Image (cartoon, rainbow, N blue to C red; front, side):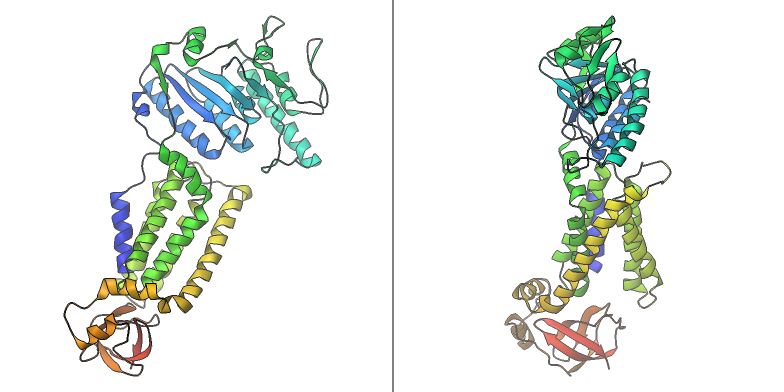
Length: 466
């Protein structure tokens, strides 16, 4: 446990969570910059946090404009709503460059910007809601979702000067959509516009897009922006990795919990402590970079770890410090997965808690199963003996050392000795001619306590107070 504590603190100091995706290009955002942010792949909450960070940085720097370089088939409706809300709060002009796809959520996000431009071969539209696996939404639920969000995004479209009927054409299968006397989209179909259709002039104004442009510099020319000030931002490599870390959160939790258990139960065994420290570091750092948590959650976990370590090292048997520390550690591990806004009041819905609860529950059950198996079988495995020897081989030649190196125990069940160090629950015991590593079944014994060997399993010597 001592090794695990020091390893965890050392890793936290040497490798603190990086700024969320900060890249060299971000430092180039200055007054007058035309900032280009990619919307690539599926729209997600992690993408929203990345975009929101850039929007704020560009606002503080006095950027001239923001362009969403869009190529997405769609994505999460909740994340789409958050992105549109964030776009509505910036103080500079916003543009969408459909290059080449703005499907579903991408079409709705485009309506959240001030102007839309299309690549020569591109398309935008088809925003009907579907379930996460691609299946159709049940009819009653679909009617509710379409009714609410079509109204919501009609408001967004009107605010930015677009025809609100486009939203119904994109989202509502059961509604015929007209512009004037022209049927824009018949009942039973969803509207998808090609680049040429999107720029068509109807009633004296473009249907949706301002123009077809072949590149970002050409867009700047058409929109009256300075193309020499283009700053293209990409998520950092770790920001992309963070999305995998959040998806694999249960695995990192299991690695951290099982590693800490192995470190606690194995005297002199430091590899497990390193595994646990790295697993927890990646877990918190990944959720931080993905925008799902802040520094404060990692600090709470570290504080809980300190409380547990203080009890084990200095006040064994109190239980209060360890109990509080364990609750803080478990709570921080769970809260790190909950999708909430950093720096804002903590308010979540049952839907926000569903995935974290499942991930946390699965990790806890599998970790407990792994610990039961390790307690039963790990001490007898050859790899355990080799790892223990690497950490505790005696410094000088002796009969006991030869026995230990050959794998034969130096003591037998029933032998008595004296604890040379405090057993918390592992430490050194003097058996007369041999000073060996030993451990209790969880009891903490003070230095000088008379002990008796309960069992010997390979290199694992278990003792109890006489």
